[in-house]
Amino acid sequence: MSQISYYTKEGLKKLKDELHDMKAVQRPAISVQIGEARDKGDLSENAEYDAAKEAQGLLEMKISKLETILSNARLIDDTDIDASKVFILSTATIKNVANGMQMTYTLVAENEANLKAGKISIDSPFGKGLLGKSVGEIADIHTPNGSMQFEIIEITR
Image 1 (cartoon, rainbow, N blue to C red):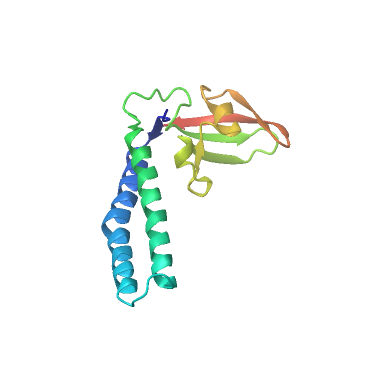
Image 2 (cartoon, rainbow, N blue to C red):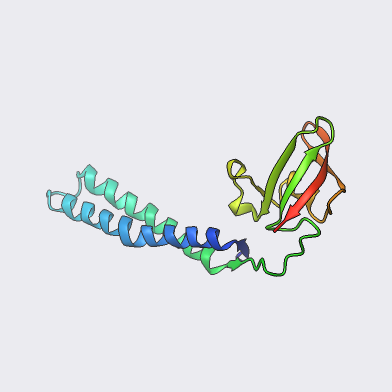
């Protein structure tokens, strides 16, 4: 049984581009390496040939896995997202109640999370704590270091 994964347009495009690169660039390059190694003679003791065949097997496994992921991928429709509460694809500006520090995060599916880009997973403790909250509400975020409180300052789509 395969698991459905949800992606934004940019996340889905990134996966499709990666698959295209594997099929159109990497696969032919490995085929050339195998051909060159085969031309060098005895295959029983040809390390180049063995390495190229192993690389081909790993690439084919990655391609198969990515094709499975893409076949179960669903595009998130952000046109009907309610901006009055924090949901997936909402961008929330929050303030740490303890120290007043403000941060802005976009909630995304787990497979697109990237903290450096300000994208946090809805499945993370932080994302779960923010989901469903409105402007002015306090979100209790349970972390390994204890519970923290954040006030929702602004929600945009």
